[in-house]
Amino acid sequence: MAPRQVIIHSEREIPGIRLAAQAAARVLDELCAAVRPGMSTLELDELAGERIRATGGGSAFLGYHGFPGQICISLNEEVVHGIGRADRVILPGDLVSLDVGVRLDGFIGDNARTLCAGREPSPGQQALLDATREGLMAGIAAAVNGNFVNDISRAVEQVVVNCGFAVVRDFVGHGCGTALHEAPEVPNFAQRQRGARLQPGMVLAIEPMVNQGTHRVNVDPGDKWTVRTADGALSAHFEHMVLITQDNAEILTWPKTV
Image (cartoon, rainbow, N blue to C red; front, side, top):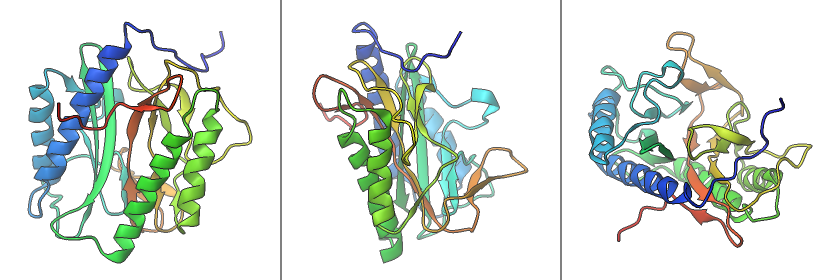
């Protein structure tokens, strides 16, 4: 049997996905506010576990294919999938990428953000952060009913490349909702094929990973998880979950205050 190209979530499922996405957004907001120079990434991971449990849910990452952390914490040249470590201390000016997934009542929330620890980012860091965030928002703007996955991919890549940066190709966005990774994959660079057609009820995690240098990356041969830029240049990562509707996409992981 061929794999499903898309998953359309039902009206019964969507409220649960919204709640899980909001839980993940709150935890990410709290962790970004807690980041400070001098703390280890293990301390941050342990705090993440506490904040995730306070939502009534659990980590969507812990144990996933054997992943040992509550969240992914990636510093500087680390792109994604960094593991909290007692000996990895955050320094002033480090770029800290936090990727938070929450499983709540059988539904998933997933979002990510990169920030500069302890001080304002340098001009180069700020340009990287801005390009990644703007690429994400361009992708979301293209996530319209009747468009195709490749419209999202092309929009992200165009912004990033025009800013002088490179999009990671080995890791991509994905469907998300009742499982952490669902169909379809959502690359951040243009494909030859247009991909799946976007339809109401699809939930996508759009997540540009952007490097200052080459798009090439390597996986740590020791822990088998941490992904780093091949040239040691800085990387940034932003992610939102969106629901395809009849009109513009609904961003499920905007933190709500009411």
